[in-house]
Image 1 (cartoon, one colour):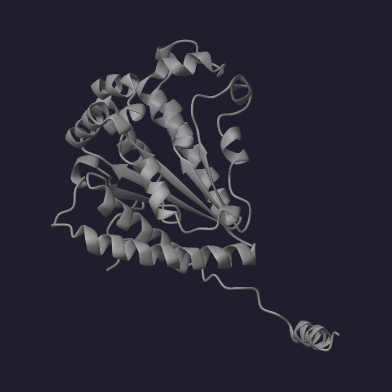
Image 2 (spheres, rainbow, N blue to C red):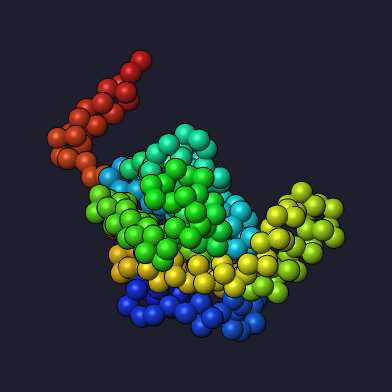
Length: 292
């Protein structure tokens, strides 16, 4: 079964977040899902090995979601079989003073992958059109020309940023980097359940943040911010994938399948060896075999 087309948002149609499921439409066989994910992990390891050997392309995987949607565990499980030498994760929290002395995409570009590598963004440049959309007062502290008051942050400001982001991602695609963008679509009820488990289960207490709970009062605003960000930045080349996230194992299956589908389409292969090089290998092999 292919999930890539079913969960793709590519800008061809209006995106309405309420029309997209947060949970599986059918019953989930967790055992079968885990078996398939294990197969996907092995396949992904092979693709990554070829990507690393080829060193002409790179892959950027972006995860965005509301708090408690499972980004950390998603990365832990789906990417568990890849070679750490060619894979890394970057998280983007509150910008530092150094970050703010540059344009807002500066710190993002610094963390994009090298050729041959997979880079994972746990949160990303989209924070600059999500949190700041819900809390525009944040922007008044970032030394942005013309932004001294939240009232200065107009819809046109974010439309400009959507264009920046779309063009930045197109630039990456044009220069050999595949961008995979996943929105883990969590329901408000399931977020509540996960917050409660963090409070009730001692082993999960460390995950609890009162700030996350306070942000729940802005749920409708965040849903609107995600809807507009996805609608404005989804393209045929760099689509979004909207992943039902209420069931963690099901969401992991969808993401692992889509990553493999997209990497398969990259036509990855180990570098070919010329006839002259093969002859050289044969000569060296003979020399080693005859070594006393």
